[in-house]
Image (cartoon, rainbow, N blue to C red; front, side):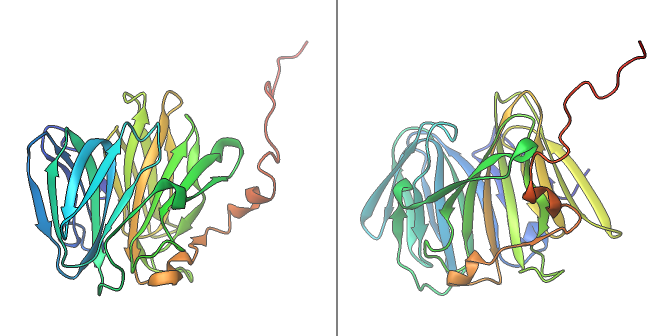
Length: 278
């Protein structure tokens, strides 16, 4: 089994828990938690900036005496609020119904204060075309301020690809160094996704997962695709060597595949391609 595939434990409060210790990388921590009404969550992350994203449900966090009410019907129906927490601030979940939320952290010095980002502040764009048509929401990416953390939410129509042309950000081929997690949701949720990490002549790591599972990108070029029966959402957390406004630095794209960006319909097939002789 791929070491970059992390299955979800949907029966546990902590459904996913990814750390530098579990991955062997340097910066990024990411987890998904499911809290029922009245279940406490309290944490202080010294030396770490933190971002909290509601996935479904509602809850109230208290930080430095200020209440932050987070809610979301579904990742497929609305954009999120993002609660950014500066290093050392105590995080307490104190009220609300069931809340499933993602929480991730990276080393930081505490330059930016705790605050709530609203959807109106976030950039949304449509990328690609053809079989790689998708929506990318920049939910905590430059110019929104953070020290290391970069967050995206991506929506991919059924049977389509994301991350095309394949790209890397592992410090090789002139790329920046960024660690990355992919948290996948599917609609309907009985489908599957596939993800590939690779570098030509070095390694080829292909994995498949279900709704709620995760893929990590420790190195290499990578792309993802969803099965024809389900639409795909994924949440990206990234952190690495890029700081502050330099978090907008793009990855490196695989030169064998960038030609399609000039014309997504070039050489597209119109079936049938071959026919039997008359």
